[in-house]
Length: 278
Ligand SMILES: *Cc1c(COP(=O)(O)O)cnc(C)c1O
Image 1: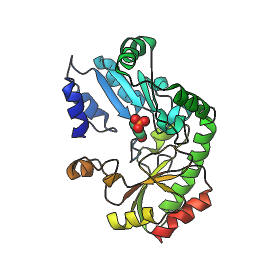
Image 2: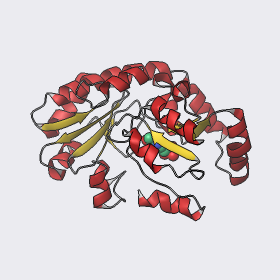
Image 3: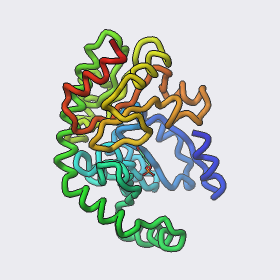
Image 4: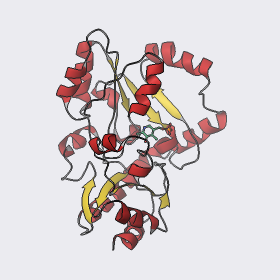
């Protein structure tokens, strides 16, 4: 986490981290006259915590800040943050918009005044623009976005239920499981649960690595959003560079595994995960 605030700090931007689920923390963290932007991702990576977009948007509005939402896990097919009061929506097009792990890309969506005045000028002069080929691939990917998100969410829910019943699994994080702490909010805000299922295996790092290393069908990678199912050990990859204390505070344990469910047969996925679990 420090990693990111240091980069922003070089540009004179101060950041304060708050709980994605505790609205009172957002209110308390506001520095009157200085807080310009609220930023959240929902569902969060990798624990699929759900932020109440409408409630946080109301706080932002009251204090004169903008709310930006990273909508990467849901994509516009499952969640439309602007309908809940967000000002800006950010997508990693590398993930579900392309959907097949082929290109890098991104999108910032919002009112013309903000996007054209601030963001477009930065892109034009600083250079992080999309190449024509990548743009074409992403456009082709978006033709199947709705179908993929529905099918991958359905498969993810099935895998999540199966994992929850498995004796070697301690806990499963999936927004559309009844056991998820923000289950009701997720059902209000999202059309489906999304494709990301995180789970903790009993026994910590060794058994978690065994599950990951024993897969044959599932790809081991830090990426997500592919039609191929991918698997990651967050504590040593995506969240490997933050301190152990920051990791513990964020709830990312050594036994945690993040699965991004694709379009393979659910039975094949269960069999692949069972190699290491059993
Ligand atoms: C991958 C990811 C990003 C960053 O996207 P890139 O395309 O890799 O820059 C941002 N937010 C979430 C939730 C992601 O999973």
